Length: 140
Image (cartoon, rainbow, N blue to C red; front, side, top):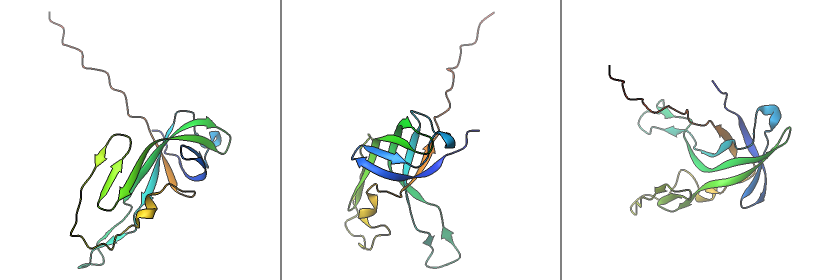
């Protein structure tokens, strides 16, 4: 089983080129994909404080590694999620658009947190396993 590589954004060169603080010494290779995470704070049940939802996250965007050094990697931004009050839209094809006009506007996450920034957590997204198409049964 391939181990997941975790790191952080070390620098933002321009809107589409980002440096991650993991490199070949950590197992990073060209074409590898990283998810930029927005981690939610713990969510506590108001009726039962012992009931806590932990480790929930959203994906802010995806990075594809273009150049690898020993301890850092240059990446290209290949997908981005943007937040507008009441909706999230993923710019790489998936549309998550729901409007809730009557919600209390005290949000769990400030909308500015959706911006990709230095220090954001990144986690390697392993490629999906390739499966062979089913072969028709041969007759006798």
